[in-house]
Amino acid sequence: MRGPGPTPRPSRIRARGATIAAFVALAPLLPAAAVAVGTLRVDTALPYVCTLPSGQQPATVRITAAFPDRAAPGEEIRPTDVTTTVELPAAADLTASLGSTVRAETRLTVDVAQNEQRAQATWSGTAQPLDVPAEGPLVLTTTGDVPALTTDTAGDLTLTAADLALDLAPGAAAGTPATPASLSVACVPGQDAEGRTPLATVPVGAGPGTGEPSTPPTPPSSPSTSPSSPSSRPPSPSGRTVPVRPGTAEGTGRAPKDPRAGQRAGGDEGLTVTDEDAPGTPAGRPAAPPCVTDEPTPTSLSAYITGYSNVRKLNGATVIPVSCVLIEQGQPEFVIQPDGSMHLLTPSVGKLSYQGRKQTPPFKATFLTFGFAPATATMILEQTGPLTVDSDVLLVFPDNLSETYIRARFVLRVLDVRVNGTLLDVGPDCRTEKPLTSPEPDPVKHPGDHLVLLGKGQLLNGTDATGYLLTGGGPLTGEVSIPAFKGCGAGGENLDRLLTAAISGPGNHIRQIQGQTCAVGVDVPTEGQCTEDRQPYVVPKPER
Image 1 (cartoon, rainbow, N blue to C red):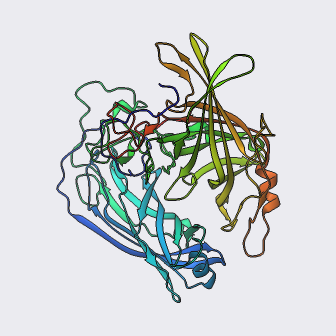
Image 2: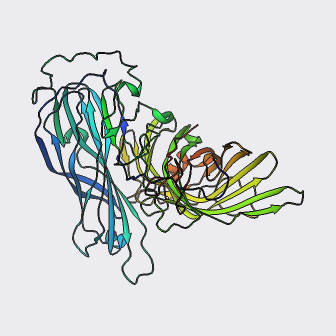
Image 3: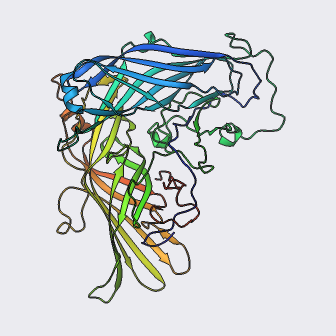
């Protein structure tokens, strides 16, 4: 790792957004048998209920896809030609919220079941910008890659559409002063779980529809590793598998490696949802959201961050997903303090970046509300003010000591809440009434409500650095108070006090891990810092 200052960029390796990965184990490793397969085409329209600014409204979601009509145990099942079309009803307040054009992204949760085992995958899709009609329904069609499935067990594999998240990024009409705020819409199936029709059923076994292999599977010719070890399953040639089990990420139910993954573990080994590697993606690099600097300068940096945040009232923690931060470094300055110590001060500014918005990707957290009621919420950290990075390196031979303070204004948005599996409609505007607040060591210089994270590092002369440095990454810690909530509820029901009582309060510890930065505007090859298309190479994992 290196001290402050732009670091060179490595040789380029092409990368693109990858799909969700989650591993749910069911049974021991079995060899695959070759099976000639046809194509099962799906084209179905399903009733949904979506929460719009005006309240809950019926909507239609049409899903098309192609599957193999059967598969052998161990054989990859990859949905192709997947489209998700959402038809939202005409609503004057929806038109007013979006403006003249809109860009849509969908995240469809798909329940996967085989025998008694259950898992979940997320089908993500994006759409080109389109004009918002002045009247009539708004029809949005998205396409995108989806995870592949593999199971070592015979039996029918069924896929059923579940919750749908719809992100709408408006565009301003020509001559208008500002772009309207983005809108997140949560949709749920219009039928109960028992009444939902599967999207597809793929028999796994040698005979179509039998659910049984034609011959008993033979054991591996050589001893395998432990069933719980990821190495006991060879990865698919086109992807990788990520192990996830019930209650991963310290009870959050999420896979810390990929915040977009949706899964519900059910057994010990067998069913795999596979994340496809992008062509040219460095081997072993985890999936991450795009992190692109549109107009880089020689001092532009980008990095991924992730970590944990405790929610003290709920006696639990949630994973802050892998998020992109774009940074512009300031001019370093040598300063001699009155005590004679010499400091290298580097001020920088930054912003979160997710689909053109200053926020994290949406993430889910599961807690026991009031100690007994299981609750799941989808949340976003939204940047509402400046993000500053102040690095101070104390130049003391032979050890140079570094302190970096990161200050930012974030509000916490809540998009979707379920208590004991029942939807609690919080509406589209549920958020903290003011930014998250941390103790500030210098309130005169930095007034107002904001989050404070501190990273400490040491630069040993002639050796690598330890701890945190802006360009090298590392751990950042802090403590935050979660303010009261406002705007929560729909249909005249005010849920502000309920969410405030359950979540808000002081003493919530945060530990963020930042990865090695990519010096976006420096075109000098350096191993392991940037991908070919100038995105960060290192995707960190959350740490306690």
